[in-house]
Image 1 (cartoon, rainbow, N blue to C red):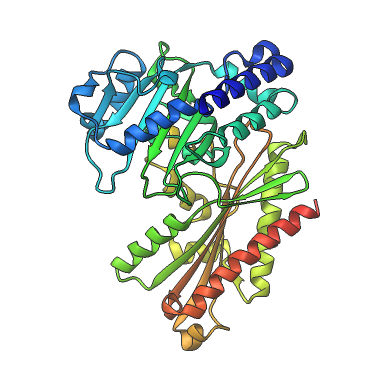
Image 2: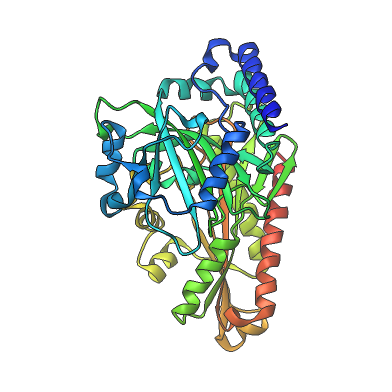
Length: 418
């Protein structure tokens, strides 16, 4: 059955390619997430053998492999360039694993091969009229693989594989959750990145990447919730692991601060023709909507001068501190912070805030849309921090979650009015 599904989905993608895009589809071919048997073979192998034997490794070859080895730094000794392809659908790729064992049994394999940046640009330029339907069919077919959990989606730039980010910067990608658990701890990514020009003129202008991750302690797959509002698609990312790790870190340090986090990704399917400035204006208006509701709840917004007084940094300097010293592919990851960063405080009105014992802070930020991706409208993040006595208050914890739920409704309502 899985073999029949793979055959049918492959025919479907090729047929749609011919009908919708003619020869333009020849190079950006959406077929990796639908290679069901091969994906299952890699998934089972990684779970069974999270540590790769040294006998499976070979020295890096020329070109991108050599560049990767030189850029890996201290991790270079752990890189294993596989002698044999993990499965037939990766036969023309260079594949890399790590040799050291992880405590939790997590394992991954990253495979890459040369691609054309011009093909990626054509895909984006002709997305609405030629590729949107092909992409939708691709994601729907990927969900039907036996090893899939039934979830697939466009991948956020932050999901570009760490190994690939040493060579390239995210341009477009897709992801499917694997296994039977919910939330899944395993996934497969398929996408494309623009190669770092610093590698040299002999390097291809882009790479195609396939990344399989299993037993991951970090939730890096599809959203936990999706809402369609007219032509808008609002996805709520899974931040449970991020939230837990942040709170554990502050607990170990003895710091009286705990966090609740929500992150939204916003997209639009129709041919809207909105410019980047118009998209950023939308982000700003959604920030306004959330901030107004927080202020109605008794929060006061920190001014730029107060932010500098409290932190010693301006908004621009805070962003610069956050984004420096990262690999090429993560340097913006196609993602830049939205031109707005707001901090609001509530120091009265809750039992835990009495006599100045505690406070609740709201950090409102976001990410810009990826340049050239018409459907992408960036992201919005809201972090609620419970400080002092409020960090240990169950009422304050419930209050923080309610604020996040209200933010979702604020965004949905604002989108309905557009």
